[in-house]
Amino acid sequence: MRTSLVISLVLLMLVIGIGVWEEKQTEVLCGRYVSAAKELRIMAEKVDWLRAEETISAYKADWEDTTPWLQVLINHDDIDDVTLALTRLEAAVAAKEQGQCYEICAELEENARHIHHRDNFTLGNVL
Image (cartoon, rainbow, N blue to C red; front, top):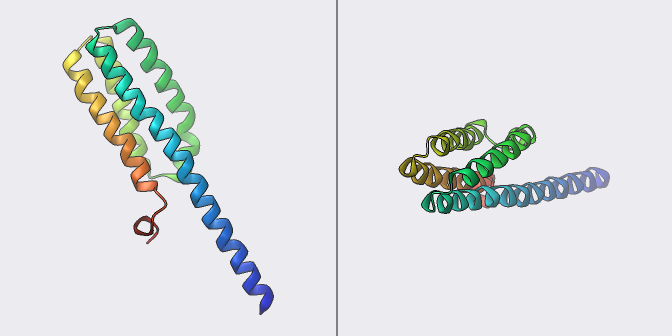
């Protein structure tokens, strides 16, 4: 009986520890893409399309590298929303569409924030 209790407590602590670690990982990742949206919005304001193309390509490649392990932790639809926003933003930058860039940057920022919000280690998300 005592052994079962110890094993249960160890497993509970392990699950809580993994949950906290996962939340911190997604917080850092999502913060990166919130910052990316802000950075790209500034580049669109300055009409710095060459730098914006390089930047969006780098962020998109990084996102594609991150997606496989992220899909283990997070709902695929939320990941797809960020992927789609990055793809649309890449097209808007290539077309030099300033208005679309503003709109899609806002969408990317919101989608990135949503991932962390849904993954936040809170009682509401656990239940």
